[in-house]
Length: 257
Image (cartoon, rainbow, N blue to C red; front, side, top):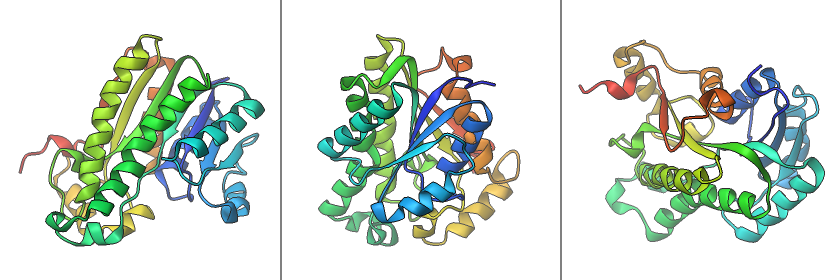
């Protein structure tokens, strides 16, 4: 098993349809002990029920993944109760609905800042805080989630494309910083998946249809497949890969027209 004896922190678990859950399932099946963060103390019972199948896992509330002190407090507690971790998966992103439904030119300053703060800076903060608190084991691997809208114009993705572009640039700079200590940082660019977050994108179903028509493998990717790619990046089998955006989209990104 690729992650036997490894402890993996997954940030942003929401429900069983989420990419984070697919990653958790793959990591667990490959021997990892799982630790989660989630939003909202009121969701505690639901999240604990959700992760019950991952024996020995723990979940910690984190309201404010882009707020220094809140991340410090949660990470400190995680280290005190679990020791160091071997990997972090960042599955946190958000943009205001109106910024996705209107043309990009109408993006508000507040909406722009919010999307970049939550979707991009939160990964930089999590990485820095984990480093400062000595939460990371030697040769730790960090993985975040991105999307093709970071490099191409995707209808109704708008400010999230900008936030993901910032996230991908952050991956490269963080990889250079952490590489000095043999820690790795990568991103997985998953194809579109019908998650709760995707519901905020207008006409999302039409995107799925286009993928089936044009992707070389003529099908949409699943959370299980994205989970397996992420497990590979968390494992020692990918120990020469860092600073990369790895596409898990059935090849759609290579198609021009």
